[in-house]
Length: 87
Length: 87
Image (tube, rainbow over all chains, first blue to last red; front, side):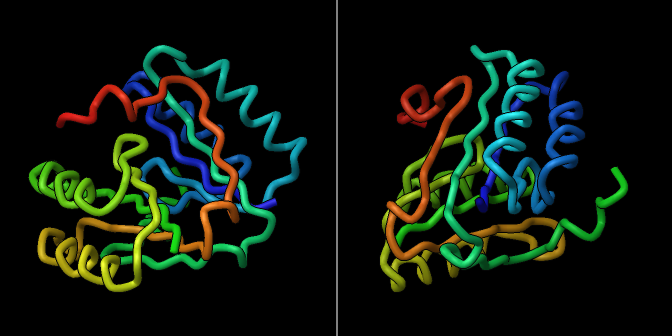
């Protein structure tokens, strides 16, 4: 399964969420990740995200597609991926 | 065409970009928009975004799908849409 994950977390929790998502998906911009992931791994990720997040303040949106090819990606401006692989 | 648009803009330009995107798409989180849009309208939006952005600092990512139903959306935590419709 191909997913795009976008989060909006409070400043205190954002670094922790970034580290978590990096273990499961590829970082593409600020708080946006994408990648192929199994249902089980995604559940695991969301469970852990739920432990980090404050539900009344933070949010995570996941877009699920059957395959990567169901979406076409276009980037304008600076590509962030390369810069920040070592965060 | 269904698109998800995510931007990462410098602080000085972010409000302008938010206002621009609101004219074309539905806001769903922080700097994330989605919606049905024609090729022509999308080109127009990206042209205007290009005028606002600093290409060496900012970025826009667009995911294009043929239809809304090619993606399934799931939200955890706070839904931001309703709160901020009047920005």
